[in-house]
Length: 381
Image 1 (spheres, rainbow, N blue to C red):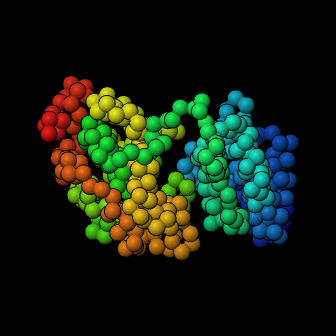
Image 2 (cartoon, rainbow, N blue to C red):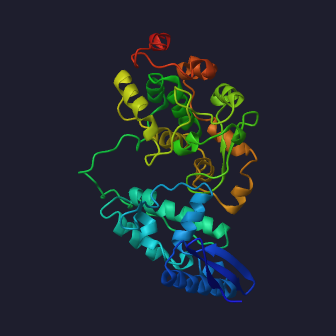
């Protein structure tokens, strides 16, 4: 039977069956005229979906909501303005558009409109990457067909220059000797985080949410069920991290926590939770070009310098997630483990007390931090 309205508790509900699909849900309104409009639209959608499938009916806003409900990052997707009832960002731009009808050209134009005058990496990070994550989630939900998307790329040639824009800390790699001096000037808790970025290439947000069940220390393997780009992947663990991860996994739960023992909060700026620690280390070490993402960039660059094949490097960094590689998310892969262990080991870094006994040092602070000077021994070493 067709969908019908009925009133209960002052609110109108929809009930009925359309081509085998049963519905019993609230319209969320006490206005009969508005409720009737919702009923008609709901019935049309069910009819269309029964004939053409979900691909013909799922909007970008619905796909984005499903993606976030499944644990996907809301970063850059948009914010809801309660006063205007409108969304910003990608949801505001594509909201009611059927996701399966969005083309590469539509996506490129959205990036230009939402982030005018920005460089390729900004458009990729803030528009293409989150859109593709939502789209791939829709593919898994059978609400869209699989498609290869092209991301913005750095212009080729040596004549392209951006002289007016200063280089932001964290966008360039550094030598591991320089990184060691910086990390050893940090308090143990954030130092463990940054160390892991340098020796796995993982993103800050991936480590903030990493839990013990995702780590297999014996096999030197980290299995991420869903990364920043919305795809599961396996990450090899450098041997230098084994003592630290062994202890952190024994503690259980979220592996990386603040010096107060609290899990890191999810923020818009995925490295913002470490701002205080980073600024403090800059003052103590005199090194100002290192930020959370420096670890990832340095890992990627060092693997290239070490002669690691591009495909292997991309697998480690999560740039080459394919159907075949996704199948081996939880299976340690020897080539990746061999490659990650080519990263240099700095003795002072590897033998830092918090590397060998992280739980005993997890709540201590660097010299000069607050009223505590727990790491005088480290700074003097």
